[in-house]
Amino acid sequence: MSAVSGSSTVAAEREGLWDVLSDPARLGAALPGVEDVSVEDSTHFSAVAHPSTALGATRIQMDFEILEERRGEYVRIAGSGRAGENRVELNVELELTDAPGGGTAASWRGELMLRGVLRSLLQRGAGAIFNEQVEAVLAAGAAEG
Image (cartoon, rainbow, N blue to C red; front, side, top):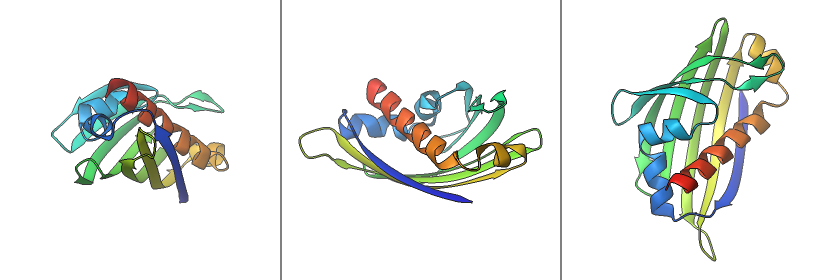
C-alpha cells in the first residue's frame, strides 16, 4: 500500500469545484483517461479507464463510492477495480478551503494498493501518478465548475 498526499491551489471558486467533486456523473467525467461512466445513485458510480503504463494503455474497470462528505469542505472516496489479474484499490480524502488571494486550496491524502503486474510496473511511480490524477481531476473540475 502506498500512502500519498499533496496540495495545490485551483483557480476556481470552492462552491463550483465542490459541485463537480460531489456529483458522481461530473466527477467520473473529470477522471483522466475515462471512457465510460455509469452512475448508480448519488454516491456510487463506475468507470472504465485507460491509464498509461510501461505496457501502454491498460483497461481498468473501476467502481467508486463517495463515503463521506461535508458540503464545500471535504469528500472521501473509495475505489476498487480490476484489469484481468491486476487489482487496484484506492482511498482518497480531499479537503477544500478558500485560498488567500482567491481560488480554492485543495489538499489530499490517499492510499493506493496495486496487485498483479501493475504493482511491478508502477511500484516506484504510483504516488506521482496518483497525485497527477488528483491534480487533473481538480483542473477539470475547475474548468467545468
